[in-house]
Image (cartoon, rainbow, N blue to C red):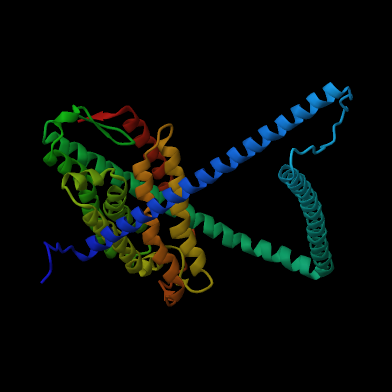
Length: 423
């Protein structure tokens, strides 16, 4: 029979306890190692101090003996050894020998290091000169003409890439602004249920109440309403996109980016909130969820973002019917980079400027979690089959209306929410 009351823990909590214990043991070992190093340094410092004091005392004694004997003190005194006994003589000789050996070793190492540096530099220069000679020998009129022709032919490819990237970036920003306004309004309306005065700003909502007026119900409703409504909006945008997926309109990508933003606001907000206690994390904390529960929420969030990315690969490729008649190996990589990755990078940079002169660390971290959902898209698209769309000739055109709408919406939101909207 087991002795005492043996308490049983869950699987994840046992792993968490074990990790805590291992971290505690590692901390103790580091503390002991640091203490041992400090002790060694103190002992070495004390030994050097005593040796230096003894050497100074012997030097002063030697100077006194010279003064008494009438012998003038030399300008550059040599380290003469006048021992009191054989033991002190042997010790002084060892000290002199050690100092000389250390000096010789330092000089030798410095010379070897300079020699090695000069040898590596000569080798590096030889390699560079050899490569330049090969490159010059390989250049002839035909290869130079071919390279110039390839660069001219790629001008159309670069133009298509920039046009698709500009259109997709504009749709990325439009969808984010819409989701941002919906989330701000949802939190403000939730605060009005508890008679909290709210000011909607571009970086966050400001609640004009005292700290002691917060309670569990208000915190859970206010800080969870925005992610939940964003998730619901993302579902609606996904339904709209599924209806327009076969059409050759560019506007459908706005709904697909809104779907990504809505899901990222929920699952990315859950991930960032449980890790950094911000936004959605306030509602989790007021639910009194333990560390194991937060870890489970973070794992579920990452899994949901990855699953969203895996299931959206074909939809991203189908959105190419607004630009091409066929999506094959020659233009597939270019399209995915311009339609997915480039708007994500450029959109985040533009939103960083949008938050200036302040900043919104929470929204920036939540937006960066979208990369978890985009990684499966970037990994799976080469394995997808070729796609054939409508037979009518498609042209890659810049949508000035989308770009103008994105710029106008960003400026309007920044100005209006920069002043603040009271609720």
